[in-house]
Length: 346
Length: 159
Figure: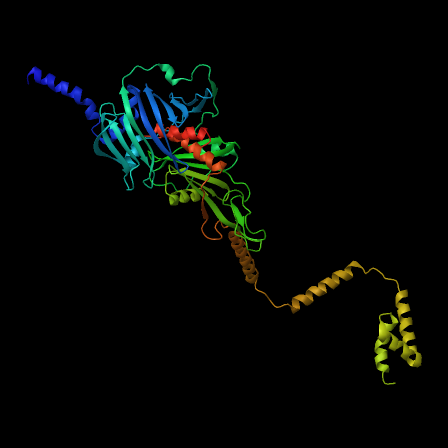
């Protein structure tokens, strides 16, 4: 073989390398997750999501470099910013000159889990923000509507457009870039709290705990659900405390590789969530949906159990009062699946 | 006297003051006309006085032991024989009833399946869990960070 032929072969390998790396849809998808580790970019995007059953939308100026990303949102007359610096999520409120630092959550999800449960398919190409993008659709292997549709930049693998659908196939969020520039110089201060701003840090770092450790901290027996939908695995247990009433609960977090399922538990107080047959009749439970049925003799078993379901579009939340624990299940699952999970905790 | 016998039947009650009303009045009218009944009444009254004059004495302990033993003999002699398994069977049935009652009282779904209430608004507790879930979604694989950030801002601003 002549020397120039060998050189030509080696050169072709060098230039074809990135393309070969994206030869499968999953490789392209995972490549998009780390795209901003290697490049700098600025751009503007239209963002929408469903929250509390209604659609929210905003435009966002996006800046990314060295694994950090910043979104400067504009919605109506409101402006705010969100920075992920790899350690914290920092919400900047320019009107108040305050910064809220939230612990950046970490989810050690095994990518092969997603590949086992979902199928990534190439759906052609389109131009987004003036750039050629591969369209990749990710749907459950066992059937059902796609969860994600991604438009990945051919050159950088950056996701130029992204759509998320819930378990019923409804579009629940989407981001589409209208302009993008790769490779600009970006100052490190872009990803830091501006000098002189008030900083609040309300949440402690969460630690992964076993069931027995959670039980010891919270003072009740934390239970593992007997039913989890196929494909889901446990990520860990965590102690959580939120809200005005500083609710302390145990959280068991599961994933199927893409979706996240959270199961919260706390000790049940008395007969909350349940009416009682009998003398006092209706409405002896506490809280929403706790009405009893009444009409009995006042002597007998607790009344009909109550479950409260809230459908946010992006996910559903269901509260179930078991014999000893109050359970809240949150996830993008059908109502039937969520009920089954919650009841299996008892 | 045709009703004398009836009066004799009442004299013992009259002697201890147990008669009232018209019965007592009739006995007194008869006593006023009948010397024989007055004598009978006098005899009854003296007997009573004699009985009241006698002091009570404590019986020796062995007397009561003998009485109890005798009563026991009479009961055993008169009672029908019962097989031992009958008592065991009764105890077993009672235990089964107690367990069944316990299960009935503790059963979690006494009126069928739990009632599913679809709420439009989440209360504080459910909202807290949804928010907690949302914050973890930032780190979920393939998360649309821009969209999650939009929801987080709504959360921070109270929805």
